[in-house]
Every structure is written in structure tokens, then in C-alpha cells.
Image (cartoon, rainbow, N blue to C red; front, side, top):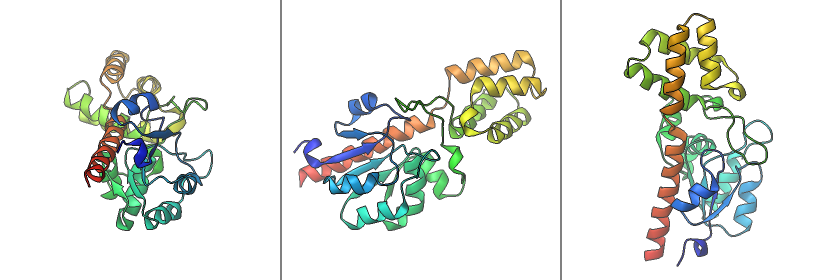
Length: 225
């Protein structure tokens, strides 16, 4: 039995493109999930659904009850990375399978806000045009570990990024504003920007891959029965 005949579906397109995702898992792909998407997928006969990306603020987000109804109907739902991590942390007690660091952070209360994973996207391609807070925080921590910035500057930069609206978060904007506010020098801002652009800790993409790998594992197990 092939993956496609197993009626598996993944909602993504922002944290990982459909083209890149399909190289890892050959199933059906749809754009980020929103209110009503799950019910439509269940009606279409999908029995394994992965939630990676979802709509947060521009329209109604996927409801908890939609996911619970899908699980109650016998659908296996895997979540991680972005909207998937958020919903999995809230619904793992109902049987939703959560994977990845971001899911664990939400589950354990290390992060709580939706804006931690939210990004502005290109409305046609769903590609991100801003940087997610979870990535920025981890990248800044890594920069501090590499001694590019000190711990005090790192904490100030993280706080500054958190105060910035999710649609406007970028490494360029952050380092420029930090320099203007004298948090770091102009030279240090340029050095940090270069590091962030070339060595970003892309936690969201890593977790997106974990969702796909978990689904592949589940499909292989079901195919062997």
C-alpha cells in the first residue's frame, strides 16, 4: 500500500514548502489549516492528517473541536512546528500526537503566546516574509554562546524582538533598532546580522521535518499490518 492510498494529508507551506516536504513524504499537501479545513479533510476520507502550519489572525483558526471530532472519528492527527505544535500541546490529552521542540515548549509552558510561531506570509505562496520568534530567540542564544554578543545584550535583543509585532520581525530590523537604541554598537550589529542570516537556528523547519518523519513512521507501521 502506498502512502497516497493510505489517504494521508499534511497542512503546510510556510515552515516548509510543499515541494521540499514531498521529498520527505509522498502524500497529499494543502495550504495552512484554518477553520473548517479539518472537517473537509475528514469528509474527503483522510485517515492520517498532519498539521504543521495554520492561519492565526487573518481568518478563523482551526478549532479544537474540529480536531477532537476528527480523532473521535478514527483519524490519526499529528502536529508540530507551528499551529500544529500549539494545538498538539492543547489536545495531546485527547489523542493528538505532538512532536518536536516547539510542541514540547508549549506543552511545558516554556512558551505560551501564539505569536511565538506566527509570521507574516506571502498571500499567494504562503512563504514567510517575517521571522518567527522561536527561531530568533534560539539564534540569539546561539550567538551569545558563540560570544558574538554577551548575555546581557542577548536578553535585551530577545526582549526587543518580543515587543516587535510578529509581522515586522526580522534580523535586519532587530539589529538596526538595537544599534539605534545603543543596545549594541553598529559594528556589533553588522556582525550579528551576518551571523543570524547565515546561521539561523531554524527550529520551525526542523520540527516540520519531524512531523513528516513521524507520519512516515505511522504509515509504514500501518502498511506492515
